[in-house]
Amino acid sequence: MGQAEQNAEYQRRRDKILSMGGPKAIEDRHKAGQLSARERVGHLLDPGSFTELGLFTKHRTTAFGLDKRDVPAEGIITGFGKVNGRYVVVAAEDFTAMAGTFGEYHGKKFAHAMDFAKEQGWPFVGMNDSGGARLQEGMDTLEAYGWLFRAQILASGIIPQIALLMGPCLGGQAYHPVMQDFLIQCKKTGYMGIAGPAFVKTQTGEEITLEELCGVNAHAIKSGQTHLVAADDDDALNQAKRLLSFLPSNNKEKPPKRATNDDPDRSIPELNSILPELPNQPYDMHKVISLVVDDGDFLELLKDHAKNMIIGLAHFNGRTVGIVANQPAWAAGAINIEAADKAARFIRFCDLFGIPLVTLVDSPGFLIGSQQDWRGILRHGAKMLYSWVDATVPLVSVVLRKSYAGAHLAMMDKSIGADLVFAWPSALITIVGADTAASVIFAREIKEAKNPEEVRAARIKEYRDLYENPYCAAERGCADEIIMPSDTRKVINRALNALENKTVTRPWRKYSNINL
Image (cartoon, rainbow, N blue to C red; front, side):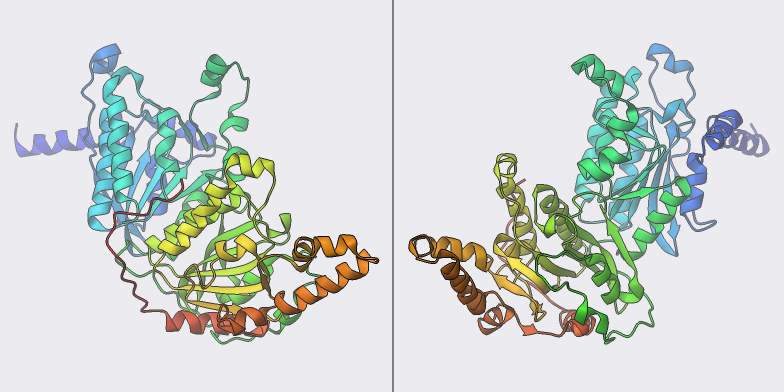
């Protein structure tokens, strides 16, 4: 065969693979409001920047008719390109090619892409859309899942990993997106579950729809596994681009700085009157966040799960910062199991990738009661403590109002490792509220008094005047300074400037034995 014939044969083979499942299969995707796998890659990456890896990969299975089954590119497109000029590795499952089923060489390609991303120090974006395990390949499929899980875990903390849930993702297939750092789920087409409805019914007798079991409500609200919800493929890919803009490429680089004209010393008079008159009245912490960050731009994560805790990414003077804040407008900002888990994993992510952390504190404490105790609130709450103590990035806290009991520590105070702590004049920093303290300390005195209510009121005032304020904390050095609310943005920016080159040296250990 001459060179011309060789070139023609190459082009024929290449064109066949690039056609994926064929024109009709791609047309069906479009009718369903979805992009093809190759279109998804093209939408995410800068034009002309994609280099494909493993185009000609082919399975080796002959059982159950697979020797006659052609699966273009093994149902997954892998390679690298650029997003806004920065390198990213991608893997996009192709539902038009044998339903994007996960077999031996599908998994090998996926794992190799993850390994390549780790070795290069480039973020990884996976686009998940698969009919599940390719059962025809038996043990080879099962082993391939192990390759991918191992590759992901070994890359964790070295490169950012983002999963886009754009189609079905069931069984073993569901573990690899949920183990990545962030998961973006398409509202109408993304489904993730350890088993589908048919299998659930067979094994347990429960009848449930795919949407109820595995849809957006299941994971963005209930399970807390979906960080961002997307309207469709385009929206998911755009959200991935936005998320990447906050993140460094790997754990050895600093996060990218963003240009801004927002004055870092900008005063915010509105904050001086933002709190309600009574300490038990709610307000929306989102408003405080939007006022203090650059240009009011805040990328909130897990916004519909555990709403009493707010987490997300923003910029201060162009620098990426992670924000952890209580939400007094939801369950009074008390910390429950879900809120603790939500915050702890985010804190650890930010620490792994050199992203400074700022807390905005207003919480009456951890949620108490039998249901929280029996479900392990102590174990889950400890995750926040571990996360703060393990963190070596700049840590800045601002106490707006309540900072009581365990929440005072869980929201990062000086004793747990905060570099700088600031308090508004409205801050109530103490072990418990004056009402609670008086009912415990002076219980007998109040009970035996001729006028119990008068004694109770006097003792509550005594305790409040002594402890329930920011000044006692400042006197003890637990707060570095009491600031006017209007100076909050300025103080945070100056604190982050001072801590920019923070370094921490600790005794060698493999890792902390966190209460998982």
